[in-house]
Length: 395
Ligand SMILES: Cc1ncc(COP(=O)(O)O)c(C=O)c1O
Image 1 (cartoon, helix red, strand yellow):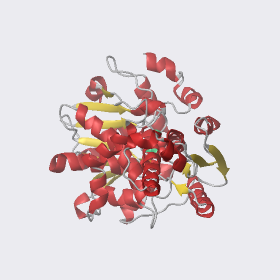
Image 2 (tube, rainbow, N blue to C red):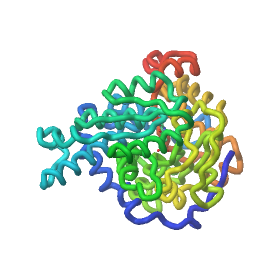
Image 3 (cartoon, helix red, strand yellow):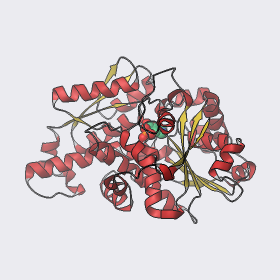
């Protein structure tokens, strides 16, 4: 389902939010990410065959499947936020200014050893926070709800984090991590914000601006359209804000894509304010199963997004397969259940004359998409696509 929005009627986001997600914010995040041994730009893949088949000018996919060896763009946010807050705490304790490379100093690690970071997760964000805690030398406790697969839980525990299962939904696990942190004196590193808790989620989003910046650097011509998948909205807001800061009035038309079963930004856009929706049936787009938007993400997105799309379950499955088995000459892309959804949103809008018109989609359109995760649960990927991710990656 497509909802056309008029971004010009929304109030601009507070200036510090937009500023944090622009080029200076990206540079700050990169200065920390250089400390990660596997930090490198991810590939930007051109799909001319698919673009011709769908009747648009160009489709480029930024493939986050191998980001920092963690399987998703989330690697950029949580890990960076943990490193940033550990360094800030060490600077306060030691009474001197520190650079990201100082994270390895024994006196900084001694401060880190007294810090416990925590978060709730659908999988990918928790993995990133756990990786950041390992790099920084602090303790980490990650809360997951019953729907998070055992494979995803193990991937978090592999970084030495304690993983705790909670009753209820993702949104319940967010509340539980915050309550436990308040009791224990831990630091919450959440990818979603709430009233009075904005700085750390904004730092997490600042990390995501790195992938937006890399994509814009790699394109010969700026994109005309972005289709951005959303859980709480942090990724979509960071990419949209970064593109807007870099390209000004020439910034692309932004469409936000969510599962119909967890479309909290769609509901918020329709209501004109942050709206939590009731938790319903589980979605295969598990990383996007969020029923409450991040208020700062919605604040940034509302004046930037021209459209909001909800996806049926079958649309995500079809998109995974279409990216895995490409048009002749196009590269195959291993896109996870949530990674493929920007493309699924594009496919839906191209098939809907009203959406095409509202977004100005046509043969001159240059589309930028983000495959936000690879096969973060390889067995599930194989069940859905009918081939194992390694064999798709080799084609
Ligand atoms: C693979 C993937 N794509 C997209 C998202 C959506 O990001 P956000 O919750 O910031 O909207 C997530 C969130 O966990 C994710 O893991």
